Figure (tube, rainbow, N blue to C red):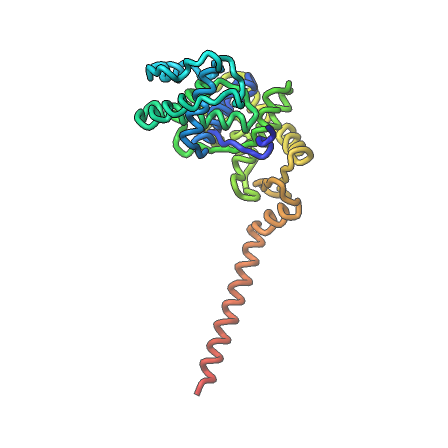
Length: 309
């Protein structure tokens, strides 16, 4: 399926820490959490949940914990048809109507079992839509664990699923990873806006999984500290930003400014307008003009009132 081309998942910023050391492990954590959160929003029908459970039970895909739950039902029907063993697709020869009916009865009467079954079904649908192969039970457990570890007010960047999978599954250089992290950092700063005002230090802190430069702890490992120092140098961060403009649809503007305006899929003209219109001098001129207009308006009102008989 190709639906994941236009689908995005959200995740807590701190998950990206350590990506330079183990890219795949970090991306997998992002997918664990992102897929779990996405799955909770999916609609479902109980009959589809029952069908999925029975199908995966016969094809040995259900997972240990949920398989034990099904066995604990002590059914004389569910999972007992040897003719279905090894089936890998719903077809005309796979119509376990009696099993589905009994499964629906158990789902109606056991809230714990129903919760587990629905979670499993929703995650199964997400992985199919995203084109991801993974252990559903394991991803659910890891996603829930990460959810409990999210600090208050943690930035929650959002990235395209296809981009994440391609980045995980291909060899990348350190500079490739740095580009990816700078892109993610800027996305987390922009959020749902077209552009945002920031600075290079703020981008660097987000690149390494910290909400701001003030939240970077002093006891970082030597490797991480060296990388932060490296990309904090003007040449390296400017090189990164230039590459993002050339290949990642990111726009920046900082002509004679201490700050930096960043945008995604916006024109350079818009970025320049955003930056220039917010200069103190422009604001002062605008304020002066507003005051002058207000004064003229007030004088016209006074003159008009004086003319009244």
